[in-house]
Image (cartoon, rainbow, N blue to C red; front, top):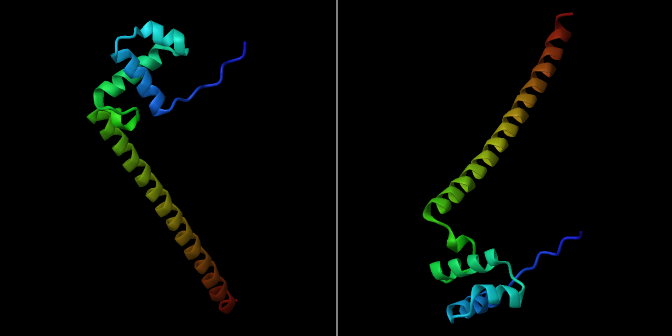
Length: 111
């Protein structure tokens, strides 16, 4: 059985569905008529009642926002650590190359 393609909805459409619900239309009727899943409609209603927005980032709790911010900081720090590791490897390789050259020159005179 083939899966249906995932549908996307504009904020205007979502607002219309929420307004239908708020004006007294039953949730079941909205879902049937517009072929929506109850969970989608419930999510839109909750998001709109919470802070009049359908953006995921606007509907995060304070803890979720803090976690996302900390995850961003961690990613940035991991990137910085990787850059520093590579710089250290490059410097070490450079030093090893100079030591080999110095050793060749030193051995040349001691033969």
